Length: 355
Image (cartoon, rainbow, N blue to C red):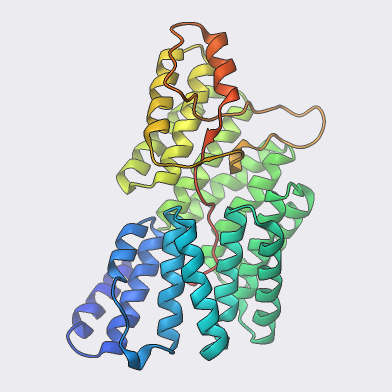
């Protein structure tokens, strides 16, 4: 991805003062790369402005709207994301139908983030049908992976694990390395919920390595939080704390609010579990002061399904600014009663990184 970004920057220098069409193509490509590296703010700044009338119904226009929607989604600006992706779908149906599978995959991913699961499934089914009809192997694999993620969100973990494995095989067979990382992570997530912590840890670590190999920094950090949660489920608090703190530092460097919130939630829980209420309050205070909407559930916060499996304690912001001194029992009770701070949208590969 680093080399792709360097090549794109060189191309932009060549075309920025000349060919308008190619200048916009490379701007959009650079924005896609920036989003994949968790820099949605810079991606949106790059795409600011209107296309010339001559490009208003081209594939460039659809892709610009779509990447803007993806960027807003990653920034947790869901209403703006919905507007942009709706406009992209409308234009694709009108003038660029070959792009519909990609747009629909991204619309479905947004619906999952906002808990509109029935609508999400409809988008993924349409994307899969059209992708197969048009022999679009990337979006076919994307629809499989997205559907697996949806099944996890709906707590259908056995089916999700199986579909994740199918999506992983499809991605590997077609050399889609960015999707390999996501499908490994989805498989890990499903295994975690089924109580297979060894399998989850193995797949999470492979997802981290695969994301690192393709320079997908934001996704690498996301799957690292999965490793943290698996350590916690296995009561390895020392490993969980060390990884959460190192991941938090990397997330701060990227200004990735999603991962920062996730790490703060995890560290708050770790400190409470180890009777360090003052330290827990410090992490909790930062979580409350960050601009993140409250939500009922996040990815790692689902308890494992089925009987007689280790249970994760709910996590989230303690809230309210209330101080507990060394009264750990009161802290825990208040902590569990509060809405948790959202760690934001979950990764997906609805869009192509390289055209």
